[in-house]
Image 1: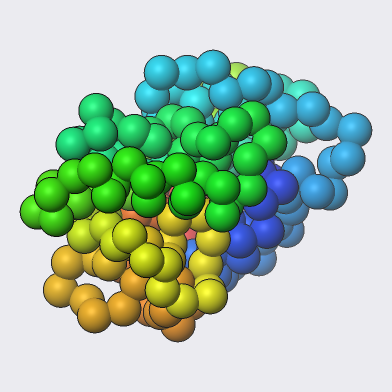
Image 2: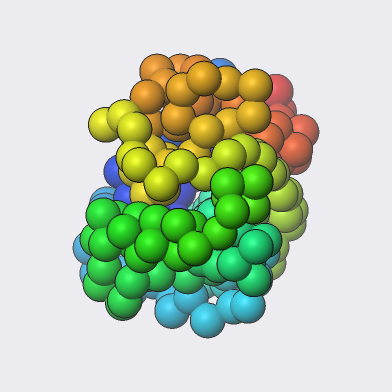
Length: 199
């Protein structure tokens, strides 16, 4: 069965491929396999709205089953920033480093006990006829003002998950994939996928 992961972010594609590997004979594609496809703008006010919009648009235009996610970092003491703007926190085409630098500057204005936050991931599963399932996962932790580690992407080097001594950017990929917000959302989606694929 053909399944499209509606992202061009290869970090996310690799993570999803790892999560999907036990689901049988799947032909997995990403948006890099469809260079003429233009995804919709992320105009939603929540991760769920953006995930649903991306999944449904790709499913209708590519005429296949699609998984799309929207995820980001939420810092309650910064009024929920960066939130849905996580990928473009420092500007529309900002780099991961520029986004981290902006966040670090804001975190430094907070007392240490307020430098906490969570990654949130919403995953939408859609067919041409509509969104069939939405799932949500959270991963809470302490936020650092000095990056640690070279793995991962985004804010991983600033995020120290509770009960772990390594940031997401210091962890082995296999460990991160087992405890991440994306994994938690995926686990909630898994029964729907297993039903679809007859597992």
